[in-house]
Image (cartoon, rainbow, N blue to C red; front, side, top):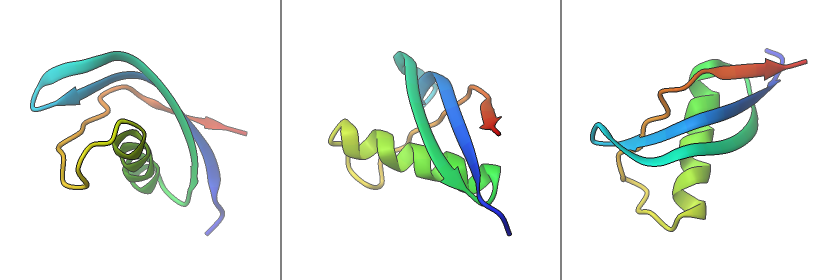
Length: 65
């Protein structure tokens, strides 16, 4: 399966609370689900959160072609 480049720009939530109004990130992945998982991981690492922290990205992913 071909990998696509995904871009996210939008809010970051934890337990239904917005913890950051706008966050931007990008990743390559084989599916939208894997891209969101990658982006959540990036956010956790960058902000020094635990691996099992609950993070949601409710905005939309854009495929960059």
